[in-house]
Amino acid sequence: MRFKELSGKEMIDVERGARLGVLGQTDLEIDSKTGRINSIIVPSYKWFGVKKGESEVKISWNEIEKIGDDMVIIKPRNDM
Image (cartoon, rainbow, N blue to C red):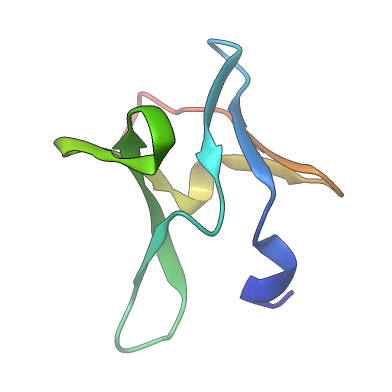
């Protein structure tokens, strides 16, 4: 799957039932040796796309349960 195919999908935390953001407004943390995605970093936004300071959510690639047509389902793991 290419990043452009992920772009625009909504990310949902299945544990809290919360919207985390939309891919495309995010950064990827990539392992420089393997080229694999380690995590997705989602900045916190206020109204009209203005960033809320330095606040962000970091989601490990291992926490992604399912990538569907419209959304990405995230299940946070507390054992890391």
